Amino acid sequence: MKRFSAMMFGLAVVAAGALWQAQQASGQGSAGWVTLFDGKSLDHFNKIGDANWSLADGVVQADKGNGFLVSKESYGDFQIKAEFWVDDAANSGIFIRCSDPQKVTAENAYEVNIYDKRPDPTYGTGAIVNVAKVEPMPKAGGKWNTYEITAKGPQLTVILNGQKTVDVSDSKHAKGPVALQYGAGVVKFRKVEIKGL
Image 1 (cartoon, helix red, strand yellow):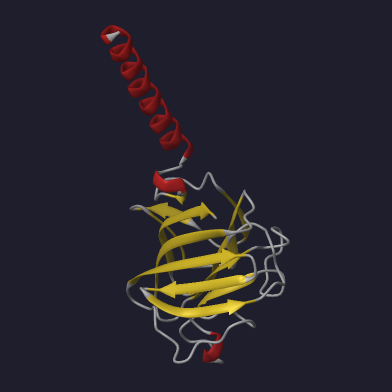
Image 2 (cartoon, helix red, strand yellow; image 1 turned 120 degrees about the vertical axis):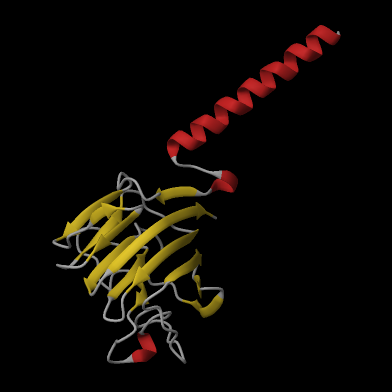
């Protein structure tokens, strides 16, 4: 009986190790988090537009053109964590539930904005454009920042650097890819993870 128990324990250890390796190989980490960008490859994204995205020193960055990195997968209910750095002149954002992955706009997706110098600051950094205003607008320029965005049914929550900037209900968009935007200035993303809810 002891030999059988030891054998079953050994098989359980081997199975757990194989599962862990499979999760790591697929980009799926602990507690259901999937790494969309790890600083090394853009395998989970399609590029649209002419932004000059490039990989260097563990980040993906752009400083010319206009465009998006659009996830190959679609998501309905999820939480996303993204680390980003922008200069003061940057126009960027994280678009969620994009209904047209070939033509991403604030009308066919939710745009969680990164735009410190937006002419109308009520929909600037920390806001969801045309859905949820932010007052006062936080600044993101010149430092590393973390967005935590949760979409569960119609409820949308945005947390920037630990501060909740948006908690709103809106049901225009139910599901779609996520997209990282480059519009102006210098924009860098260092880590992007997502978890289904």
